[in-house]
Length: 309
Length: 288
Image 1 (cartoon, helix red, strand yellow):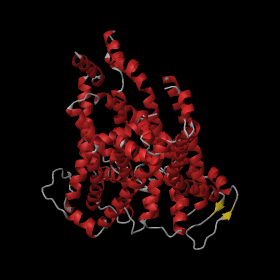
Image 2: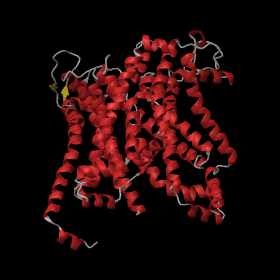
Image 3: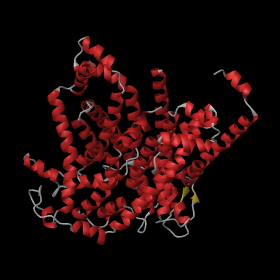
Image 4: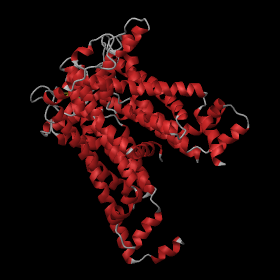
């Protein structure tokens, strides 16, 4: 159709219709703007406001008292804050690395469309849809030092029982393990659906040229999976920083500060010790940092999209 | 002919680490997924004495429903179940309804290209920011409004956290609706609301189902806000499970029973609508 022609033909009733479309468009958007403003932006602004105040919400009739940048100064001197930051970054890096590597390998292995692989994929959905609270308690039960079934297997191997969750050496590893157990299937499913989209001709060509299977994987498949892998990484990393439930039910941040993550630390400061101002200030620093991470990813993602044409 | 080719290719992919490694890996995968689930189920029906036995009781000879009776009678499982159900359902309905409307407006409405990109980016960012960052102000505000320990408060927060994902997801599905269908609707004199309800919604039904499941599961499993905003009346199952750890020492039996209760409903829904669920996951993250 010739656009010039259709533009000329535009009658009064059509203009009316486009006007009613504009109104409907905004009417469709209004409810979610309202919801998100009230439930997300206003709390964020309030959190920003509180971060310059001292406020003990557990005291009756407490009012926020302006203290300037004291909360932020306190943060810089607070070793526990830095420990929880370090823990969180360590947790995210190690767990996401395991999840993406294992998830990709499993996606490769499960990519044939047979009854058996379909069944395995369906079974793998269960850990993924399980509430983190449930998987946390389940593993807490299995990893228990005296009654846990895992320690029974360890005893069978002739080793001493391990206090997985109470020993500083193992606690972080256990939290990471549970996260990997829960999240790897998610990576597997996304990578498997990406594998289905790969054209078989480039693989055929490589096989005809005499490439080994590993060669095909590293030189043909992996480069083709790169865009999806970047998105998967981005979502897993961003989600990883939100870890809270698993730690809450498995160790509560202990032993000592060994598994204290930033969200748990913010929660404890704000709602256990009622240092509301301090906790808000940390929440704000956290958001700022996460915006940087997300922003970086969005840039990276756009670059990948452009590269792919 | 095609079958011949695809067989060898499928073999190159699935056995890229050789056949034995594949079988062993998938075996380990199966065990590591199934054994914990089996252990949880068995633990929920074991009798008290069997918990402390050494070696552990793998196949219980005595089975009891006492743990299940206990969670309903003593630990408020019924209350938790009702709350969790109501919160998840209402959240899903609100999210799918308003979310798909907004997504339709962004994908097909009369917005400028630039505005469209701004909104797309906005929902992507909103999807990413950590929930804990609004937890404290939300707690303070809800307390002021007298909404502490109400289902309404939890529904509001669950909607807030799931809407961006649903909008993001549905934009993708609506963008795939062919232009011709929209145009034919315009010619027939449908206004935008009619085009949305009569043309776009029926076509994107798989997307709507996927959105509904993702929201249901997320709201069903939600813990952070549930633990902050509920005390007793609005307590959800996830909070009830966590309660076993902090308040009552470790009672493995009832705890396992409660966990089974928490896992089964979303598992059934996802298994029944597996295709939609997986499509939703793939669409929500990989689409552009």
